[in-house]
Amino acid sequence: MKKIAVFLFEGAELFEIATFTDIFGWNNVVGLKEFRDIKLETISYKESIKCTWGGEIKVEKVITEENIAIFFDYDALIIPGGFGKANFFEEKNNEIFKKLIKYFSENNKIIVAICSAVINLLESGYIKDKKVTTYLLGNKRY
Image (tube, rainbow, N blue to C red; front, side, top):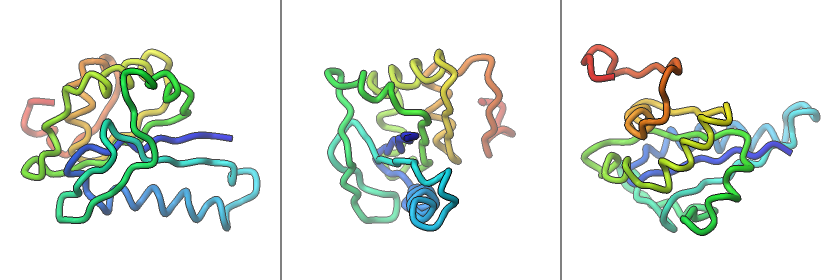
């Protein structure tokens, strides 16, 4: 079984989260049998997050300093983007997030960052010499 974690920051865009939950959810129902064994779970450093334009999502698993090692078993990490005015960037320097990114990067695991989540990913400091894209490329910051 493949395991994918969707890391949710406060202020994440609901649509960017739903894209992955829908794709992998439907895949496990109607996808080709050889690809149906994928488990997708939402995770965060707190029990629930408020989305950019309203709505609250209760995550399936809370990641802490004490249990971070169990999250190293995931095959891929997805980080949906969000909006700064909805506090999306407030926790980008969260040590738990940084440790998770460091482990995934050093072990060549898949990391997918959508839209503004690339900022949180790059500012973790562990994505060096890797190819990334971001819609803010023109601002010369990233």
